[in-house]
Length: 431
Image (tube, rainbow, N blue to C red; front, side, top):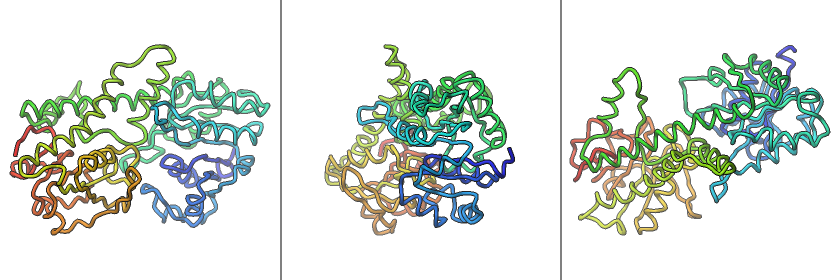
């Protein structure tokens, strides 16, 4: 099929679906982006982006050419050749998988599914979701997978804020529910990505994503625990990691911080843990890592309280948080540990404000917070400034010069740690 005539629908226009849609449109595919959020769709129709990785200039190009069209109307998927599902897969309040978005999308597709269409699930989820959850919903259409339509899984590998790799440069893992389904998905994705990696089943594809993120979850939690131990041992964790990283084999450097955030790393391992519970087993590493991640949040609060003594009680302290996003240089607070840290400070009576150039306002526990201007006067009035996100444009000199106490959890003050009012996480320093 001529790529310039091939039509693709992307269901879900968030941090995964929108970059994918724009890339497809740039490559010449007629791309329909479907989302039920009318605010998002209206913005996209006006060529206005709400995601940092997609700028308005690029959006104007693909919208103006007619290669990308955003809509809330699911009926438009009847006209496409392939449908890619990129909806959220969050956790419930009980820390169990919430597949409601996948189920809802599946029902909308099933009601409109056409013979010959290819459906690919990219949402991160536990092994078995494609076959056990999505497939039965789609076959309620009366069509059979592998014969009348084709179903595959290719887990997303979007990394918000990553400027090193373009979306199509990241290899794509693909598994189909049948051999023919995999062949159809491979045929499409070979036109899109530089490298595709076929695997034997949709379960293998699903588990690949969980393995990738569980690897990071475990290792980040481990290095965070090492940071806590280094505070007790009076050894600088940052120096130790840098020294260990000089080994040319057998070591991958990970760095400590205030806890793990984002939609994937703290969530995906718990999807795997839930699936394992169906077999009456569990991962010890995931359990311990989850405990350490929670412990890190508590530690930031208690360590701040220790640093303030005996000059100031936390219950009457003015605390400024620098950075509320879960990672540097992205406007994304999903599952950011900062949110719970702020909440804990408030519960202990501290007055908390924040500065983050990417987040103009924030609601925590029903209370609205607005971004505080980082003035010299405001910094001098703070009892402690805590750096929780290492944004590239952090005005470090201003903070160091005017704040009476700086608690750095990201090592941005490297080279300044001899300064009496600066303490880094994991260096074991006392004031």
